[in-house]
Amino acid sequence: MFISGFTGSLGHAVITKDNAYMFTDGRYYLQARGQMDKNWTLVEGKIPLLPIIGDFLSKLPAGTRVGVDPRLVSASEANEVKKQIAKNSIELVPVEENFIDTIWNDQPARNANIVFHHSLKYSGKPWTEKVEEVRQALKEQSAVGLIVSALDQIAWLLNLRGSDVKNNPVFFAYAVVTMDNVALFIDDSRLSPEARESIKGVEIKKYESVFTYLKELGPVLASKQQQILADYKTSWALVDAVGEEKVIFKLSPIDYLKGIKNSVEIEGMKIAHIKDGVAMAKFYSWLENELIFNGGHMKLSECDAADKLDSLRMEQENAFGQSFHTISGTGANAAVIHYSPVHGSDAKIDVNKIYLNDSGGQYFEGTTDVTRSWHFGTPTEWERECFTRVLKGFIALNTIVFPEGTTGYVLDTVARQYLWEAGLDFQHGTGHGVGSFLNVHEGPFGIAFRPYCLANKLDAGNMVSNEPGYYEPGNFGVRIEDICVITKAKTKRNFAGVQYLKLESITYCPIQTKLIMTSLLTTGEIKYINDYHKSVWDKISPLIEDNEMAYNWLKRNTSPI
Image 1: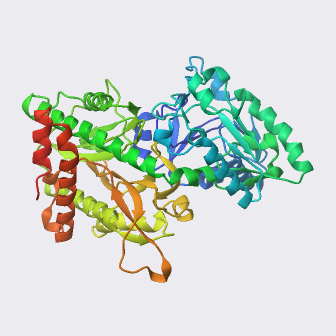
Image 2: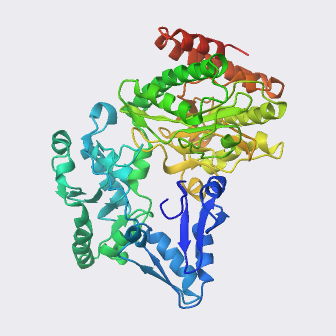
Image 3: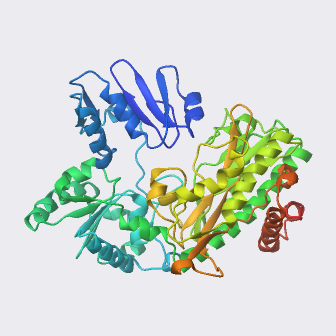
């Protein structure tokens, strides 16, 4: 961000002596183009971006040395790039001192906030039991330990939470799990007394000592001809410290275990989404009232709306904050997939254009993420058709029954089929995993055309988003998103003894019927919408009876079509 001005969550900068390049994918291309100045050359690619970057670097003059901070690049990525560029005598060099840090004089200090215990009534499983599950998985991989550097993995494993990273209840730390020890690398003073007591038995060591610890572990592993497991995303610096020949690169077992929510976590996620439903009903009723009846048209800004929604979420019991920066976009801004409004430069909301709001909250019980597209005036027929085709795909995915072992790569087509019929599509994935009072995006699974979605199957207990969309640059954008839990489906038969699965929505927010072109819907799709709206009314209305405006808004917007 400092060096380029680009604030998106996926971007790789390559700076040469004469030029500067930014690599990103289609989701962020429009955003990057609007945020970066003429000194940058923007390169759009498809995920994974690494092959494109490696190809670019391989065309540099022979003998070029390319510097990289080994703490910010995974060992597996570094190895891929090394292979690509070595044939042209180009070398990838680890740089101990980050060049950006040396010129970023006013760089804010990194957060080091208090870490707190995440109670068993929310986590559903003691950390000791989780560690034993990890150790069992390591045995199956012929590994004797695990390097843990992903912050959400550490938080989940030890039932701890923090606030070092905005919108994500995690904290800066490392961990190493072996067959007889768990070491947490964090300054001891950062642990609350309750947190320290809750992880009694865990060895606490200073944050930076992880590199020394791994360097000392390396010879021990070598002497016993043993190996330690590291996730594909583990940094080059950590792997280099222990010695790459002593590392097995595999998906971390924590990712898989974390992704399957236990019954306590599932119930907590449902509670969190009911709270979110209350906030959303109050928000949209307020927004409608401000825009239509209080003269807010072209006066109320995108940030005004986002700030109001944030405040309504924080009124809910056990609210901890946002789960990501709210996407609040009107008209052309709604076509920027990950648009991020900024105070002072944000647009005024136009009732004659589609307004898209993608937002989420963090609660002790769980994490939420919901998107709705709303028109406060009269939508065009084309806008209604596009919205309806997105809705049909959304319903298709929410109602499909599929055999156990199916990947999200396969299901992605289900949500796109009605857009494809009209020659339309969208450039983001259809669904991502969601943490339980953790990161709003989590793996290893997802519903998308990405390689990781092909490699990782969907399981009962996974929390996943369903969020197809359609975007016309400079005009409008629509997206509909629910969070769903994958559950076992009841089928008449179980072919070859296979269990079948389905998605169950736990989001409670109306879908605007004004934008629906009912002539494109089947009887079954209309029934789905009416049944869904009845469930929203049944869950949310009793909780907002004291708010007449929200209550009446919800009643109108959950009426049958």
